[in-house]
Amino acid sequence: MSKYKDVVVNITKKHPETGEPAQAGHTYIVGVLGNKKKWYELDAESLNKMKDEDLQKELFKLLHPQTHH
Image (cartoon, rainbow, N blue to C red; front, top):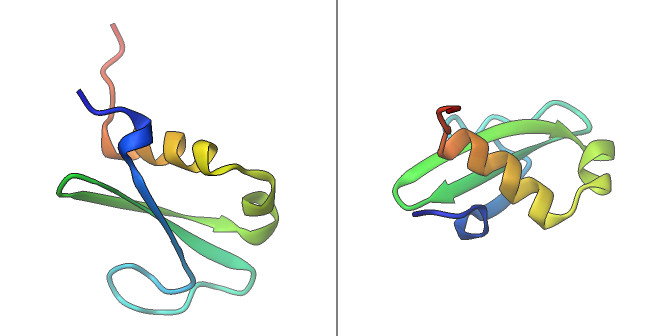
């Protein structure tokens, strides 16, 4: 079973698919888990407040959606 610590996090200023630059002050947070890849956009101020672990947890939710019991 995958864990959030398995997510590889990359931070980029370019859109992961189109290569378009992110809007001013924003960054793409890209997560890779196995052969899955998801991302979201985050403003620089929020990013500065987050730890790698926070980013991994957030991306893990996108990459590995849980069904709530």
